[in-house]
Image (cartoon, rainbow, N blue to C red):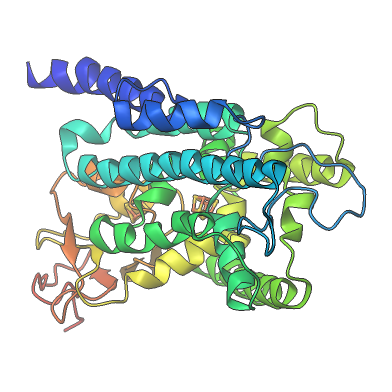
Length: 378
Ligand code: SF4
Ligand code: SF4
């Protein structure tokens, strides 16, 4: 009965809730009332102006990313007021989406903790591709939300609704781990399904991980400088995911990058996540805060290396004689928890007793220290 619920009922309920929240087909009066407001506007398909197709023109705001939603000074005309109302309606509708997405991220953080519900991960990822990808056009996403935050920090007026997605992921990651990356993100999901494990697995191992991390750090620094200097979210002009989820796009650079992304994703597990994405990098740092949700040792580790084989994102590195689980790289996918037959890994809170880097020696019969999460060499 328990298995039946996990296999059929929970997936169905999840899909139902996902569609209700994300398509606006909601029976809740509060939501439908606001949907009605949005439907009186001309742009209900474009919640925050982030979904418009872009061309190669030099217009400053071709994606509507930086619209000023405040009422212009001296605006008293009827058309001006109506535009202002339209913008407010757009903000409201977009907000429901973001809260819905954050709610499902939190839900995923609960489901990943139980063996019987961990198999819902695939369903969440597919649903995310369909809804956040093809239905919503892949943008906005936390990367645009983060970029807006930096632009806002430089003094440009950005509606607070545009910052919520990225800011909301910070407490959620603290509470339940980087489950956004492992279970929900449509960009990560697309790469996940393109990957063909066991073929020609490139860029595995600690050294490759280090190189990709350095690249990611450099790109983050570059992105911040670019945003502060130009005050524009230029990545969206070349975003390969946007092209992938809007197949009629005429953006040539985007198509070339999409080709590279597809090719690399077949042989490297989540190359964009590991070498480019600023969100995964920043959310990874949250595991360093005391009390944050991380993966730790339960105390039954036998050093069999099954978990490191299961971790496709390479968060568990093998060294001669020992393995290290780096929670900064961990996407809270839960695969290692399923793989470990000894149930040696578990979600814990970062503390003095549970470091964010879990070291486990293997094959030498050393004693496991469950308290420290560290198995030290004797
Ligand atoms: S690292 Fe970035 S692209 Fe990858 S899953 Fe996380 S947020 Fe998405
Ligand atoms: S260590 Fe690897 S396999 Fe385990 S939850 Fe994190 S990302 Fe998944």
